[in-house]
Image (cartoon, rainbow, N blue to C red):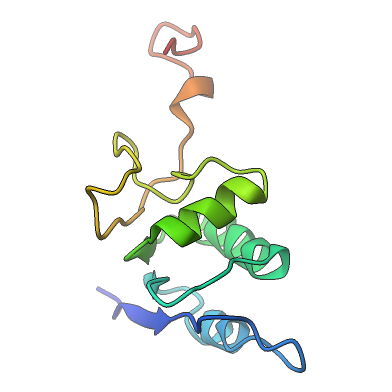
Length: 123
């Protein structure tokens, strides 16, 4: 099995240069990834876009991609930018203050998945 690549996001993105997240992701291509967001004070649209593209790329390659230690401020940022606060949670996990750490390895949206009968899943 390929080694897990881990990274801790800085509290804020450096606006004068490249976010360290980009070279980390480039170096971790084709390998499982875990990113801690525990220190993120404010999620901005640019960083979210990087995370969403990476999430999609890792899913397309069927590789684990997880965000860990998701804080309420990170969840608030997701919501402020138009996503569900639990967007990066694993399926079946409910976002909330009771969970200090969350991860995601499967990005399927069950509300649009086809059931074995060919009909869309109902919620």
